[in-house]
Each structure stands twice: as structure tokens, then as C-alpha cells.
Image (cartoon, rainbow, N blue to C red; front, side, top):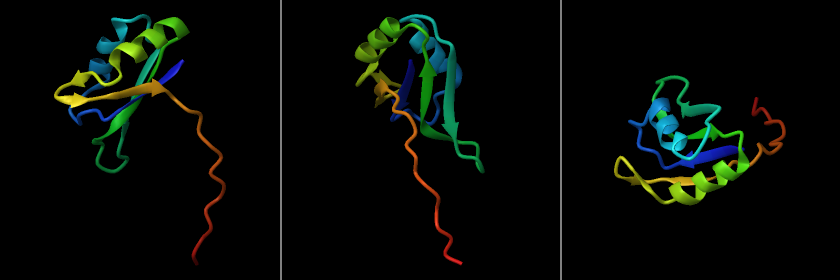
Length: 90
């Protein structure tokens, strides 16, 4: 299950997220989303956990919990929607 983790402090690293979620089960992948130009975290990321029951436990336990002084939002990630093509203004 892919899990969305939002409202993260900008100082959180992939290792911090992996360590937090490993307490609830196996973590397959962690990816923090960063700004492509500055490289700074955008304050959210995704965690992949192969076992759905472990993922559900992690979501219930961590949603609203404090991470480095901020209440994080944790839920099942929604699939990307088809946003369609952008129209050019030129």
C-alpha cells in the first residue's frame, strides 16, 4: 500500500520516515518530494508498505502524531488523476 505523509517538517529525511514506519512493519520504499530547482523538501512524501494490515496500523497510529514539532497527516495515497493536457497561452 502506498501511504501519503503530509505536513512534514522540511528537516525530515528519507531515513527519518523509514525509521518511523519500520516500527509498524516492512517498508519497501520511502520517497520525499523535493523542489526540482532548490532540492528542498516540499513537506510531504510517500511510503510503500507491502503488507496492507501493517500499513493500516501505521496510518491509524501515525495520523495526527507529532514529528519534530508538527502534526503529520498520514493516509492511503490516492492514485494520480488524469489532469488532461494544459493549453498553451501562446
